View: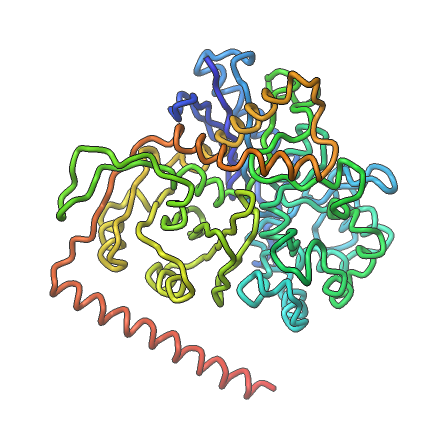
Length: 510
């Protein structure tokens, strides 16, 4: 029997789940990861790739031992992780694969070899750098709701440049954490479209006819001209050059030739086990959630009959709410729709040719209203994570938004289940190519051709591996609905008042 491993690296722990082809989680295990804080600066959150990989290995050994599944039956592995910045040394001049961890802690040790080589997504040290970036008016800002968050990778990279001598900075290679994990385990430094497009200011082909790839003007304007001059080697290189390290892969596409002998030995798996291109954790939640079937809702009552298997086109009407340390809202669309204040549209972040929008907020109805105003047709919310435990909150969400909320069968495991689906996708693509003595993608042209041929294959896997969920329809009485609408109106007016007050204070401070 075939099994697939999903690896989810969250803010405070790593988790592994062993999953069947039907989406049944037969064993899972979590292990805490370490976060370093600063006694003098509350903005600082740092982690270690060494510590995280050790936790991953412990989780894998635990699920294999607990389940009795042999490593020969593990056919594929997929990763998701937080959008944190991992920094390692460049191995050789002109290469883009990273070496030893580089310390990111402020002070003399910054840029030297050191365990604390991750700036966590929640770290807010790069406030000044983000402000500088947001004054450029660059086209890259159009794809992050008009302003780049200080939690994204480029502000953090700029902060590091400002903290260390140029000779140290020039030797660093920067990865979004999901991409680092696939590099570490395969030895193949290809990047994922998800990480590059969503967190690193990369504009994919076809998203903008006047700007694509790395934007030279943008990097020069913020003081990272050395990256332009070096051909962006520190970020993986320039797409289109004839070196495998420049490859950009969509979600789940096989990375290199699978696990290296070193990684396989550490993880207790077989060398060559296919590894699917990784995604950011919230996007894995989308993958593990939105393809769920559910019981029909007809004439206000829930019927026993299951809804039909959804199509990829139906994903455009399903808003995924992934509730973790923060809450992320994601939806896919066939074309880019720019919504002020909402990250995206991100072309090819998950599926070739599709774009994804991401928002982080507590006020879901506000997000829905803005998305609908800009052309999205949202008919249901698919929720996963800790908030899904609170049925009263879920009912309130359905009542406030006046659309049904779908609770997946295993909403606590949706993210790691999504990662396992990437592992299965990577395995099946590798199997199809195996008869040709395939040794991994050799060019971006080959990657793009294969992605086009595969089309909705990942969606088919999602449908097969996502078990049926429960539907929670709106149930507010006319009186309660009137009260909720009044509260929402007050909430919107409060936002406008806060904006006016902020403008007054900013003007006074000039």
